[in-house]
Length: 336
Image 1 (cartoon, helix red, strand yellow):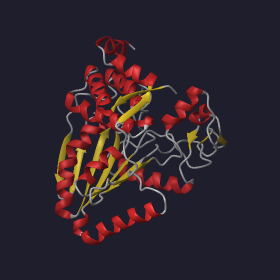
Image 2 (image 1 turned 90 degrees about the vertical axis):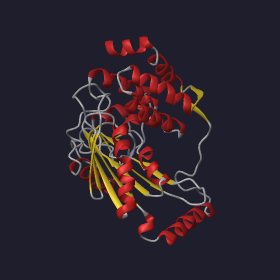
Image 3 (image 1 turned 120 degrees about the horizontal axis):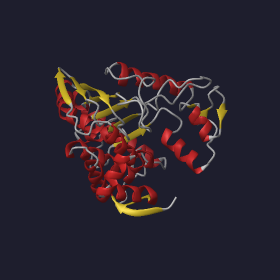
Image 4 (image 1 turned 60 degrees about the vertical axis):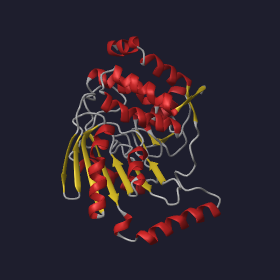
């Protein structure tokens, strides 16, 4: 893969131009552009520029509503957001102040987001909670592509989960962001397109047999991380992010990767916990102890690797983004 060097700020500006040029309002496009730029800066290519042309097509065909205005309602320590078939990012951002306020008041608060869309890397959505001094947890379902070992039909999406833990003394938060599949579907598509084999344990064919061929695995299903244990966690994510929020189940959601089926209507579920309501002093000491013990063992806690100022991105994806940012790029996308 050939790469080019740019900056997070430049990626954000280009993505904002592309998305608004394809029909999204600035309020909707900005948090999406920020998420794409953050993913690329973190080296998370499967949640970055790869999706920009897909988002443009979905704006054009109406699979995502670029002008949607999220509806936020609160009741006690709970927040409900209807994304109204728009992007997940502005919907989650719209409910975030109420979620933070409710957690500070009650100690624990939760937010359900329904009728939503691809929320990319979930770490993006829990960092504001950690920045506010809260423990943040985020779950999302996705179109079905994953099945337990031996199953002949995909039952879950990659169903990612993320959490962020606030640190003290100026240290970055602890951040974990992972899917419940052994690999992302995007990585499978990239391997298929490059003609590369996949490791055993990533996918199975449509008969439930393991495969090392990416194309065969995409025709069958991805395997969950950790076998049946991972499948059980994916089931919990499905119940909280889809069933509890009133969103489409993974088996009902339209695919993120093509233009068919209308809005996917997936859901997200976030939990915010204020340590100050429990054992604030002990919590801070314990997190500092975790940091010290990890460093003594020669490893860093997730999220503590730091970020480079310069960002290297896939050259072909960057050229596509630059082309789409021009007026003729928007016209070309609308004609496809």
